[in-house]
Amino acid sequence: MLANGLAENPMRAVVETIAFVETEMRRVNITEPLKMTAAMTGGKELFAVRYASDAVPPTLYTKACCPDGGTLVVSEPLDGVRDGWMSVPPQSFVTVKGTSTTVQTLRREMADLASVAAN
Image 1 (spheres, helix red, strand yellow):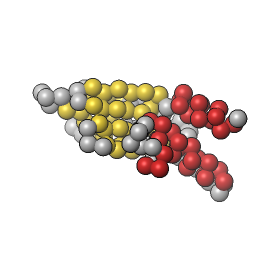
Image 2 (tube, rainbow, N blue to C red):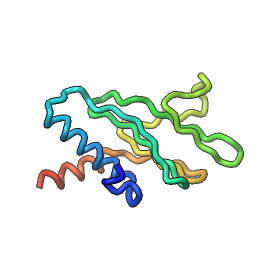
Image 3 (cartoon, rainbow, N blue to C red):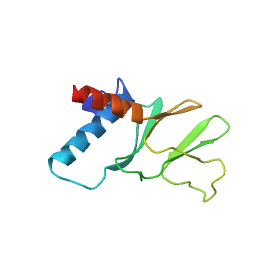
Image 4 (cartoon, one colour):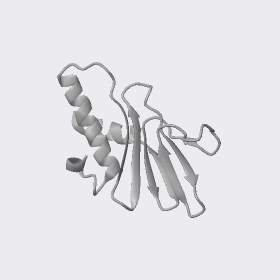
């Protein structure tokens, strides 16, 4: 992801990395779907992704916590209670900055990249 500009545009770097991995998988005839959740940070923001090339990506959850605005990003709720945990939708990119959490779909970015590659 670093080679794809993670420091400048994290979501785009993730999309380009996914596209590269999927292209390589097809090139060597790997038919299993690519499934991933990942998290990365530069220290001030946290980025996470939930993705699969099929309809069943691994799970990813967020939960606001702490009086001063902390946020947990985990594969499964830690406390066994679903209250307060938000399931990140499949094919999504999460940005946590301060007390703000945003979730964006990867579908448009993936489609834009495929369109550019096709031309």
